[in-house]
Length: 504
Image (tube, rainbow, N blue to C red):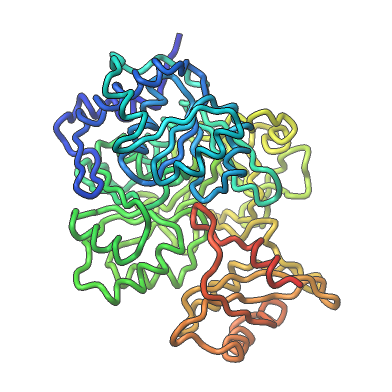
């Protein structure tokens, strides 16, 4: 029988590079051997608590050492990790626990209150992690496992719950093969060179697929050192990158925006070698400002929870292009299909706009307990993303927008990202989200939601700039100012909240 476990991503460097520093969190430092020993001890405790191969174990934990320790312990015990977004309410977390069928929830002290309420209502056992926690007590007297338990490549490893922008969150089931291959191809094929001495800042939430696969799993697949930042703050991030000599940064666009602002205040700047952006489209003006401030190239990529997540990324060995998400990973196909044909995937010629579809070793096995949703998403062997994009003659993939964010004004399609990129070139404007709101005359009207602040242009100036630099059907007719854009747990701008707020 063929076997494969995501736990091997940490087990392998534990014997190849046992004395190398694997993890840094504040004053805590762990070598690969030390961390793996702790994982096997904690896995032993979970087995003694009744966790069996295939059992779902929920994990509520910030970016502290307790997250990777518990994550790999669950996998080593043969369990399935169910990461829970830390911004969920107790009621929302309860929904995840019930839907996943989790039998245990491991919760850091920072999340213990929410976890306890959710677990009590769902009838699930809680094990607190961290100093003085119940899980640490059990681990201290448990018999460690000799090694991780055997799993099949197609067995579930992690269940990611989608953000649920259009309804109840769905659990995307990722197999051991999905996640091992995504970490491996991201580590060895998507990078310009394999560098085992890289130091990676993990400031993305590890409960989210981007941080989990790219910052943690792919980094340890190479034997890199991972530095944890429990809560992202741009000034703290720059200081920590300088202190720990970080060479690699992964972030979402909102992080890049705030890091550019923080760079102007920093007394000392880090020496970054590789930066990757994902999670949402990175405006080209933001990319240019970051590269100028930090002297490091930003490589934008693309993926979803259902694709493990990485599907494509700008790769130096192939060629890069700002404003695109590069080329597919090794073993992954990314193409453009006709969005109007729902019961089949009809691929479109290069250059045409359509729905992005993906197939390969990274595509999930389906939505937990939702065969109809799975059948709608997986068609003819392709995963339908719901994103609009193009692929040019050189193979570069461009994301235009989510289909649900598309604005139709007076019968013309308007893509918010295009409007945002144009507006962000206006001096003094650093954060803007463009949305469509109902309009009696045009069907939808274009609204620019701008973060207010010192030096930010007035609404009249923004409207005039848009009128000058955008087509007549594209420029905003209305500007709204906010103190901050609403962000989800993965730092994506929640445009649905803006539509609800300003659509009246």
